[in-house]
Length: 389
Image (tube, rainbow, N blue to C red; front, side, top):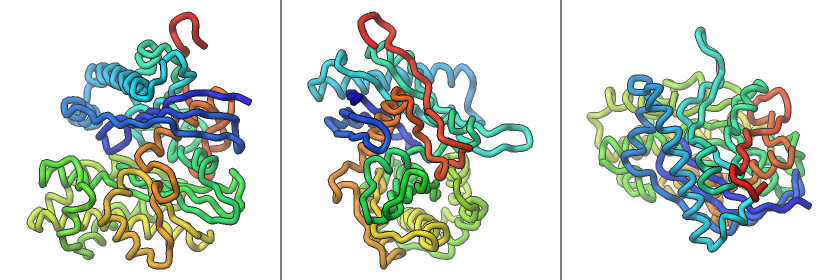
């Protein structure tokens, strides 16, 4: 049975930090097992966050800036691996593979009049491989897009492996910058797994916090807890992206729909409201979009026993309260309440996906991404120096 020691790296649409998880892996497919050994999160320096947002921006991006940041992020990711292994007391020589998601700077999974579906994650894997002398699997989303899928969400495969429970219908709701849900039906197989992006997670909340308070995020939902929700305003926000919210899954979204352009519209029309009211309403907007997605696309077709919340949003107590109010008959749990880590969840997922890529095992779920079939994900960059691989 194949055994590997792997590191998974994740920096998401929140653009706040690099999450790194050191895990031991054994087996493949539905028999695979995964144990978290150590986790660390390294915040991006403000200067790097600024560069990422500039590259994402159509107005400020350039090819030289993109190329430079691609290599700079590779160095940052390599340093994250080295720091993680040092903290864990694990020699780099013992690592078998690194799974690096990279930083998404563009995601458009649908065609337009002058463009084809595409997705782009940066963070040069050759730099990571050279710094650690370890094979790197990266560029996970592109093969799914090539197969006709949206390239997202990719966590449903790993969630099926790690979270399925006989006789229990579960929803795995991740709340990062964007929200996404995986449906694990009672006694279902991998072919029965279903998932999609529900809409904004922390992205709008964080963006408003930055503009209104100079803070990166609303810690524990404290600001939102003091504000008033303007439900008619939230209803208007739902209408702004009604095309996304009403579209049947599979579907995915990103900063292109719920980033600065959306926040600009909020500030242009509603900046006269109290700051705390805008944060409270943005928090409710996330909860409302998630609840509506369940009621429209999941509850009519699946029996759900538990909803398990992960990602940074799981620490926002006001957001969780809003979700419980909107879903009063549901049992909501956090990752920590079932013995897992909300912070480490996605980094663990990309370690497991890298492991499966080396196993020659597909890692996408067509029921979640809309791909034409199961495909092996990622590009492999070998360890560059003799004596490894």
